[in-house]
Image (cartoon, one colour):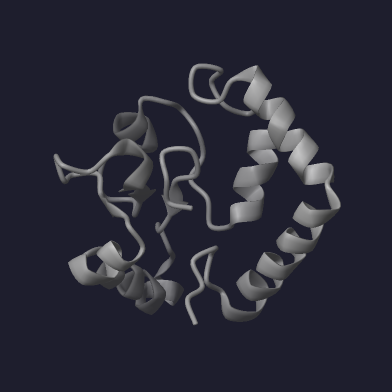
Length: 132
């Protein structure tokens, strides 16, 4: 999550302003980011696959940050559904990769894993980055 393939939607409404503040605090915590081997897009040393990509409604658009038109996501499952349904530019996610995502989605192991993650996302509202 929060990657160049599955950017995060942190454009929360006023009701969830504390949740948004918690995310932004986390994203500005260099030590925590290092723990997860991630870095901000604005860091010139940050490799593409480690970049945190998100929109909070005030900064650059997903298109400006990634070069691709796509949604921002509040759940891994919505992003994965779009990946396996081929809702990406083929330069970003090839037709071959789409087939791999489709095959993964149909596998028993992934179904079990998705159900586990879904439980955490629904129960703890952690958008794919639960850390216990």
